[in-house]
Image 1 (tube, rainbow, N blue to C red):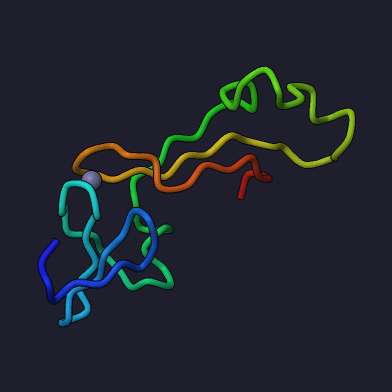
Image 2: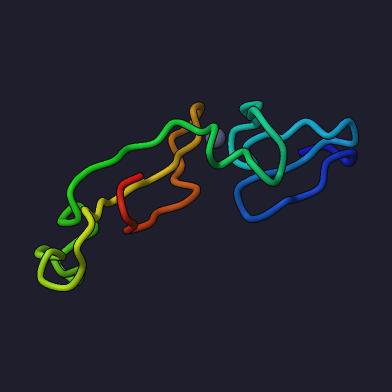
Amino acid sequence: MTLDTRRVNANVARSAAGVLSCAHCRQELEGTAENYLTLLPHYEGPVTDAGPQVCADTAEFIDVEIVFRQYYCPGCYTAFRTEVVPRV
Ligand SMILES: [Zn+2]
């Protein structure tokens, strides 16, 4: 990271020109600080991918399908965000 970049969060930096990049590998990222997450590659799978601490049978509690989703850097594959959410 150079002096003309500022951290957006632990994983993303923004240059003085407003270009976002991965704070770990400097891969340039699409979008703005407000929408870059939606433009990142992501993995989506069954809730069980979140680990044994997460209830696998969500149909017992909620009527919509629930998925495990993980957004990651396209350069170094660092997970930027992990969530268990309704499928959209
Ligand atoms: Zn990266």
